[in-house]
Image 1: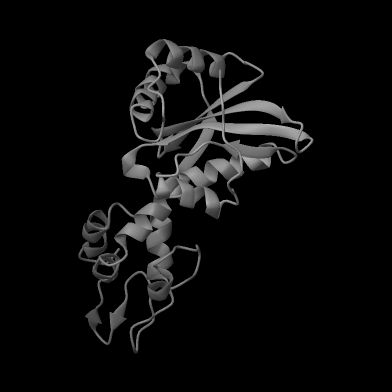
Image 2: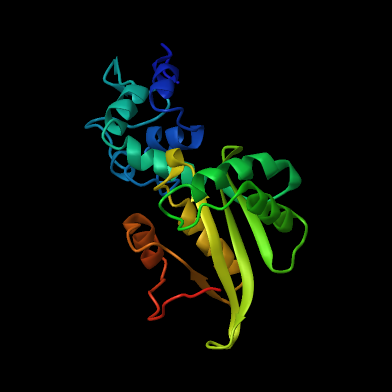
Length: 229
């Protein structure tokens, strides 16, 4: 912190940057791969050596202010990176029932899903996720300790590919955390948990954002039409 407290003041202006990120910038060291910040992290003002109380001749440079100015152009990139880094994926538990029910109501009322479902169906799904159903698993996406989404996968076996098949039934992420890579993180999580399985999912062709995410994660369209009875 600078002697006059500028560092602390500007920390709050920088969307509560964590200490590790601030140290990374102030000391000019590449301690973490922070998108959008490396240019500043490796740049030192002419004639200076960055440290906790940086000075050019006898005039102090307020590191917090410099960070704030630089982040004004990179806030979105940094916040998305921060959301992903602070996110965890964990199994669904009984205490999550109400939160998941609310999210399922939103998800199934959106254009991403063809059917609207019902509370009875949602509750059945949730109960099966938390009661060790061998065919269904439920997961919670948390960011900084708060629930920001959920995922459900159904297990089957593909005779076409001769391998177990994990159907990604639901991926829902609250709007404030979308675009931060949580969906991709979940796909990686399932792939690592079931390395011998193929992953399959359904997606509306009009949902371009989701389609692009899935393609980036290695998914491709199959030349089939899905039918049900």
